[in-house]
Length: 343
Image (cartoon, rainbow, N blue to C red; front, side, top):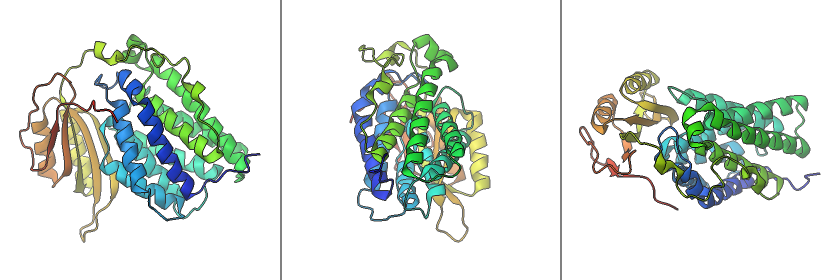
């Protein structure tokens, strides 16, 4: 059974390529049900573009090390992450890589360890993690994988891997269904969480690729809001305005913690995650930073005071915004009115 499984580095490359294609096909529907944390209709686009960055980064990789391939993909995703969903996906990918370094084949124990690490890193990356989002879906998948793997007592066979993958995807589906009941905004709009559905698709792509099976299209049947043909549910939900600020910045852990605290006081949806160590004598790490604020200027001033950021972008959270406050902006800051472009 499942004798054709090839859970190796080439399979990881195929997984991300398949995820890119699948998210491209589903991006409009994911955008349409994007209600939380801001009803700005860009979750599908952000996930697609972030996954594409990860996939392109490893397209020509010849490494046989599964962890190394995922590390490269995770760093690329982190550097070019879009929005909350893209940033959390990049954290998920980079964290998955850590227990897999040095391995040339993915098995059930390693998959369980990778999902567990991703769960911990994703929840800790957010200053104010909220259930009913991608975080809940990842947590459910990781817990299910751990339970099934433990019951198999370290079995590293292909059959054990298949059972763990099946359990993780099924748990992710059940968690997606529950998101509607966990967040008032989703319940009022009668939709499930868009980021959660995106992660479900990504996990099913992993299962499909490793097991050599088709995607389970029926997973999406009956998800609240997903099979509704009205293209943009999110447009009926009020948007309060503000901007999303993102950048990469090199800081010591202490300085990063200080900046994070300041941004927590200024805005919300603060995400900070390490991209990797800085290749400099004084050490430190490069961090990917994401925050929602009323105006860009004060946030950019705090960031500028802490260090020298790169890949700075400011995106209006309200599609109707005519301009973006750029006080304190640095050369190279990219200002965009909205992120609704489709792949």
